[in-house]
Length: 95
Image (tube, rainbow, N blue to C red; front, side, top):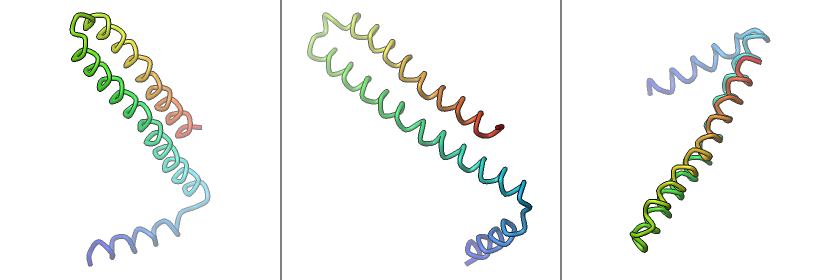
């Protein structure tokens, strides 16, 4: 019950914000949502890369070195997407 009271009080505080504060608040919320969504894709991509690399190394152990090198390149490129999402988050937050 206390949680509902806190939520109700938070709603009252949001209603008392000025237009500039409301704009900054919604910009921060949208920027956080954008970064959260931008982090989902690279997370799934890296999981797929590692899963397929392990499967490939298990099937053909003699090619493990080449697969590992290719895997780390794929991880680097996929992680670059998360960094681009973070830059977009910063631009949305401070724009």
